[in-house]
Image 1: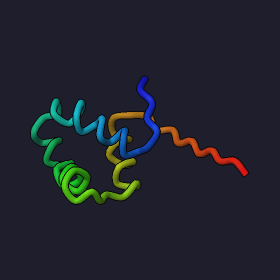
Image 2 (image 1 turned 30 degrees about the horizontal axis):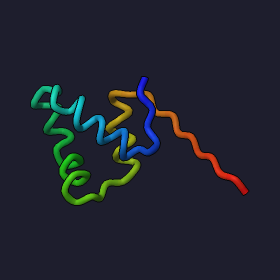
Image 3 (image 1 turned 90 degrees about the vertical axis):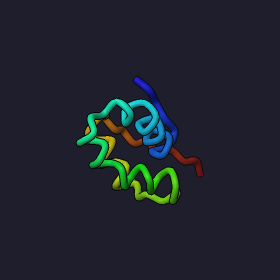
Length: 66
């Protein structure tokens, strides 16, 4: 199990390690999100979560100190 500090790090891992192995029909589904993330540097957390949920279990943790 890999752990990441941010959703963006997890999505970057997905793009580098999972996306290249996907069949062309699946790659087409995510190509706009990939472009938005890598080139525009702008993609919503909801979009990232919905893509990652197809391939991973996502657990969010928020901590803060007063």
